[in-house]
Length: 213
Ligand SMILES: [Zn+2]
Image (cartoon, rainbow, N blue to C red):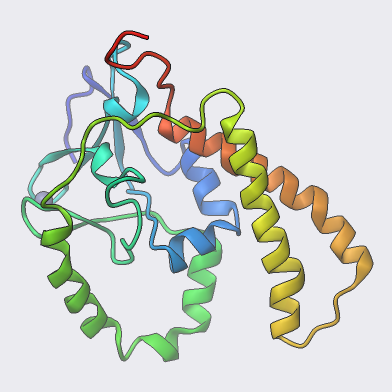
């Protein structure tokens, strides 16, 4: 879609934040269970006076509305966007990227969900307008500042470690092997830190708030 290249920088699939979204297998939980989605095109306003969340603009390719990215911040509609980001101007959905592991899971489970997809989507669409009625577009205090992202990344990595190393094998009846469990620790610690750092980049620096602190 067309946008003012003098005013915005574009983040497309090859931007590191987007690549990480596509390749980190743990994000399957965010995407398929929580319905957290990343649009195919994110625009960042070239305005050094604003923090990244305030500069983030998500254009709707259907009607051209330039939405504030804050509509999909954690305090607003970050989750439950399984069918894409809903445009409250035209009622269409803004196309999103897919995590590769999500795609594999969707492909393997295709016969289970394809029959329900249309009715799920129409009931989801019906619920969307009211989710966009009382949004709070003030920029929230960023809990990922300082070392907040490390804490968040490690707890996410720990959660994923438990799920992937113990819960999933237990559910599928596989043996839990000590060696595998040990190898998984540095893998999920690294994955967690990468996730925390990416979320920090996505949420941006929020050091100076409106009170000038
Ligand atoms: Zn639209």
